[in-house]
Structures are given as structure tokens and as C-alpha cells.
Figure 1 (cartoon, rainbow over the protein chains, first blue to last red):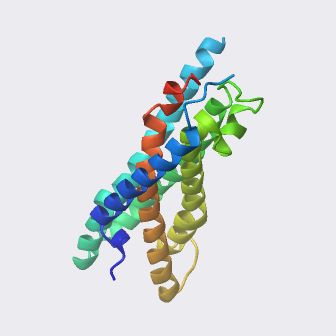
Figure 2 (figure 1 turned 180 degrees about the vertical axis):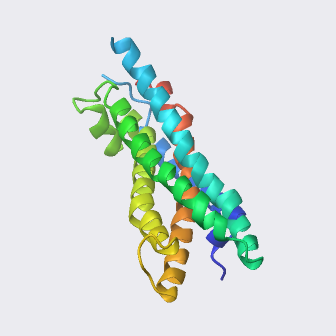
Figure 3 (figure 1 turned 90 degrees about the vertical axis):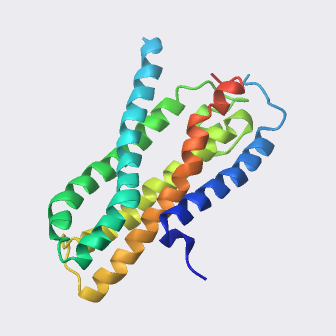
Length: 37
Length: 171
């Protein structure tokens, strides 16, 4: 299998997928929108 | 006075960040393909001699400036549950989790710049002595590290720019 990072657009797609994954992780970590106190 | 600290740090963080990521995108979106074509045509010499050393100098020092100013900016944010903002962000606590993910991605990218990209580019550009075999290996490692940073920059910019930390009552 080719390394997706060898292609610039493969790199961009990997970055977009990683963004979606991290978004859901961040969403879970933030929880119910706790306020700073 | 505090009214000025946050905007000036934010401005400096953006200025250095645009310099850093702008050069990263130049390397990946423009220069990699251009160098490949120029090498095939036997004309890559001037790129290595005149462009890359200058571009890499601004690139690696802008990375340091972005990181330092970013952490200075983060330290001006209010504490969370008795923990200072930097600690809360790096431990991904509550509303600081999104900016913390951005800060971790930026930190990994900075380590990549100095530990992998610059260390290997010095061999590729002949700044430190290396055999042809070592240069070929260094070129591949520097290329992949640069591509990893391009990939990481996409979520990093998302978490820096979307302002979750504003929406969640931090600022």
C-alpha cells in the first residue's frame, strides 16, 4: 500500500480525517460545556 | 496595561504562526514538486543554495517564536477549577481541552521541526558532512516529517481558530 503522505492531497485528506476524530474527542472532553470558575 | 498584553501576544502569535505554517505550506505545496522537476532537469542547485537555507532559518525560528508566544498567551487565560490555564489546557481539562489539543499538536510540530526536519535538512543541504546514502535517507526522513507536520497543521489550525475556548466561557 502506498504511503498517503507521499501525495500532498493524501496528506490533506489524512489531516481532515484527523480533525474529525479529534473534534469528537474534544467534544467528549468538554462535556456539558462547563464554565470557568 | 493588561488590556494590551493579550492583543499584542495574540498578534505576535499570529505573525510568527503565519511565517511558520506559510513556509511549511510553501515546502509541501510548492517546493517539493518544483525541486523534483528541477532535479530531473539538472537545475536544482540554486534552490538548495539560495532558497532552502534562508527559508529553513525563518521556518525553524518562527516555529520557536510561535510556540513561546502561544504559551505566554495561554498563561494570560483565567484559571480553571484551581488549575492555571496552561496546566488545564495541557491536561485537556473541560473547556480548555480544545485549545489544549491545538497546543499539543503545535508542540509535536515544533519537536518535528527541530528534531527531524532541520537535523536531516542539514545533511541534505551539505551544512553537515554526509555520504550520498546518508543524504538519501535524510531526505526521506525530512520529507515525511514535513508531511506529518502538514497533516497535523490541519487539526491544529482548526482547534486554534474555531474559538471553542471563547464559546465555553473562558474568554
